[in-house]
Every structure is written in structure tokens, then in C-alpha cells.
Amino acid sequence: YGFIRKLAPVGALVGLTWETLILLPFALGYLAHHYAAGSLQFAQLGALPLAVLLGSGMITTVPLLMFAAGARRIPLSMLGMLQYFSPVLQLLAGLLLFGEAFDVNRLIGYGWVWLGVVLYLVAVWRQYRAAGHKV
Image 1 (tube, rainbow, N blue to C red):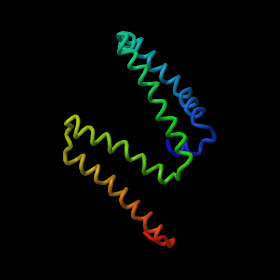
Image 2 (image 1 turned 90 degrees about the vertical axis):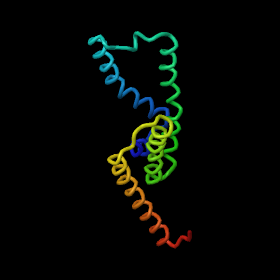
Image 3 (image 1 turned 45 degrees about the horizontal axis):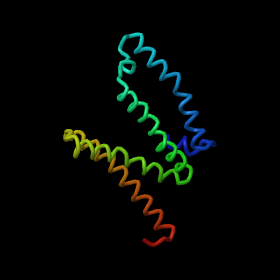
Image 4 (image 1 turned 180 degrees about the horizontal axis):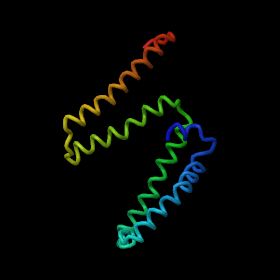
């Protein structure tokens, strides 16, 4: 996603509008399917839950616009590294706020991902040093 947003020759607002329009038929199809199956909960919400749901969608627009604008201004390698923050924050929220389980299998999988990140950062650091920069 970050790669496409970085290379797209449109501004943040135009790009987000196009993304939304491309996904709109799929979203409408999904809603139509649940409506036909009688499992569409959206229509049964009260005023406050419906307002919160619609408002949260609109509030999400601001970070998406900021991401799209920022993605064009930084190197793709930095953008990729920054995209690790969200899963880490979600993991910490799950563990610390919601008491989610973190068993050995998850620890091993998470460890492999972060080993890859560390290896990448070491390679970047070595290139930086080889170019004559001092740390």
C-alpha cells in the first residue's frame, strides 16, 4: 500500500477518493449480501451507535490523508519501517490493556519478523558507514 501511495501521481485527497470509489462496489456488494441473508446489523442500530459508526469512518479519513501526503515525502525504505509501528502498538495494546494471551508460537513468529527488521537495519547502517558517514 505504501509503495503504491508513494508512486501514485495524485495528491492525497484525490488518491483517497479514488481508493474509496474503487472499493465502493465491493462494500455495497457485501452489504447487499448481508441484507439478503437477513444479517445486516447496520440497519438495526440506534441513533448513537450509528452516529459513532459513521463518525469513526469520517475520523479515519484524516490519518489516511496524512499518510498519503507523508508517503510521498520520505524514502520508501523509511516508509516500510514506519509501517511496523502500528502492529507493535496493537500488540502492546492487546497485551497490556486487554490481557491477550501471547504464547510461545506467537513469540517465535514475532521474533522471526523482528529478526528480519534487525538484519535490514544492520545492512542500512553498514551502507551508511561505508559511504563515509560517522555515527
